[in-house]
Every structure is written in C-alpha cells, then in structure tokens.
Image (tube, rainbow, N blue to C red; front, side):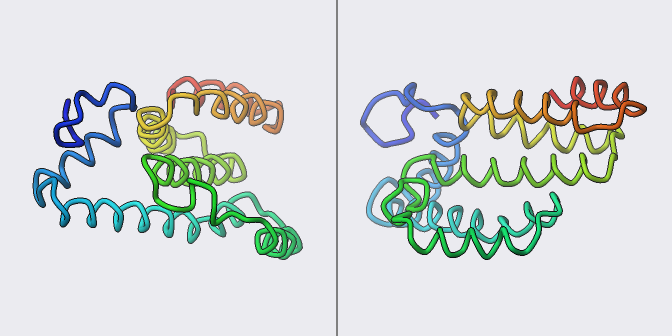
Length: 168
C-alpha cells in the first residue's frame, strides 16, 4: 500500500482508497506495461460508468427531460475531453463516480422520504468510500445535508436529522 506506484516512494500525497486499488492491480499484474495498461483501462471504465449513471441521478431527483436535452447540448459544446475527470487520470474518475453514486442515492432517499437505517447505512458506506477517495467531498455532503433538511417536510425533519447523523 505504501508504494503503490512501484519505486516512487510512499503515496502519502493521495487519499488511501485509490492507491489501495492500484496496489491490488499492480500486485496481480505487476508494475510493468501490463499493470499500467490495466490501470488505464480501470480509469476509463470508471469514467464510463460515471457517465452511464448520470441518468440515474436525473431519475432519482425527478429532473425534467428538458434539463437532459440542455445538458446534452452544453456537454457537446464544452471541451470536457480535456478535463482530467473524463480521462481516467489518477483518482479523478473514481471520485467522480462516487460523487454520482452518492448523489443518486441521496436524491432517491430524499425524494422517497425513506429515512430507515438500511438506507442510511448504504449511503454512509458510499459516503465513506467517497471521503476516502476525495476528502474535500465533505463540503458537498454538508451542502446536501443542509439542503435536504430544508426540503424535507417539517413533520419528517426529526427523522431526517437521525438519518443524517447515522449516515455520517
């Protein structure tokens, strides 16, 4: 784990989840050409999965179809192919994927008002993975919590508070 990149020294500059995943790939396939190709494929697969789950976020949040059309047109005009989150570089594709999954789960729970412990634990696991990949994700999580509190009907706010505390 401490030397996931094969001879470059400790990987203390990264959050622990991504170097741990890399170390598994390098342990199985080696740190040579095959291992590096596998890491590139892994990053590309994560970025592709991230894109395929975006409609799930829209469905969970009940976002209208017009927003999808607008997003598609704007996405076609933006140079997103030059952004590191879309190329599978370093941990950005994994963190983007986890942000999409957490957003979809959170919106689904908020829209369905399902504040049971099972939903809380499921969301908490994905929040934990996201925070182990990208610690600054705590700020969007806090924003989701505050927004969710105000969007929850006043009769269920007590349930939402317990939900928020247990998934953190």
